Length: 352
Image 1 (cartoon, rainbow, N blue to C red):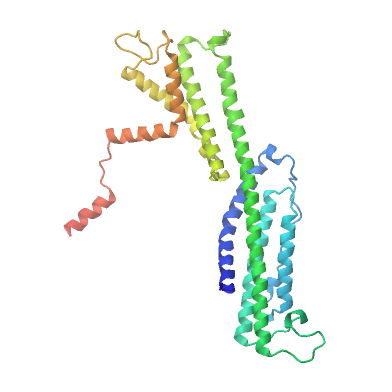
Image 2 (image 1 turned 180 degrees about the vertical axis):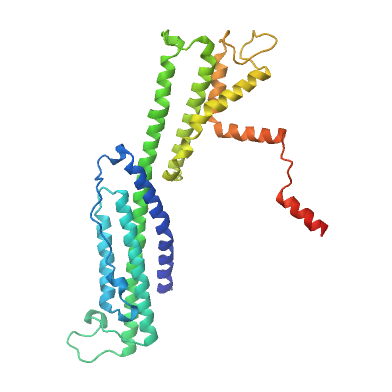
């Protein structure tokens, strides 16, 4: 048989541990939404009237509590539940209100459980309503004190379970609303990457491409650097879009860490240019007819420019792995000769 008291405290502990992270995420989303015009469309940006939890029940000492207070707390929990269910267009501020209500119910749980302990320790039999005391309304013969006390403590446990379970349900609702907002922000971030980073680059690339014979097309002497710039950028944006989509599908998307999808994009062209220049220095070529010293960047023969495009795209797409490989290569060429702290400790122990 499940111990109701133990179950209450387990729910209380789990709910209490969830409030902090949920509020932190709600504040972060609130800051993000306040700066984004499109996410605010269709939502009331003005803060609603503050629904401050009634602190009266929390200020009453446990020894001054009564069954009436317990009933008021249970009614308040049901009121919070109805308010949460009636929400239509949920804003981050509403989510913060939900978590505040859940915290208030947890405080009431502590108070009422302390009241129950007070009754048990002082062998006090509180006055009960007729429906609870099993006595007829006009009965003059009171129930035994011990029976009344047992009935009261059991009733209190039942009420507290309702209150703490409602607090848990409120946090479940807040968590669901936060996930909805995460989805909206993820879709918004995908649109930014696609329409703000990728499409303009493709348009500029096509406008300046020599195949259209435009007067503003890129000259052949700058063709290879231009291809390196565009295709590494294109590859980095594609990788960011794929990573974002995978994180959203797997539930790993965190709107507090949007920079992880963007930082690689402006860095990738520089990394790709340095690697292509390094390959050129070593004598690699995209041309079959190059001379004794072959160069991958050759403005005189662009027949194999596709190789440059592929290399640049891969360097942009696998930008993070490229940096990791460069770091490993650097460590192999120039190993760190400084002794580690562990080796120093080992030598000292050996001398002793």
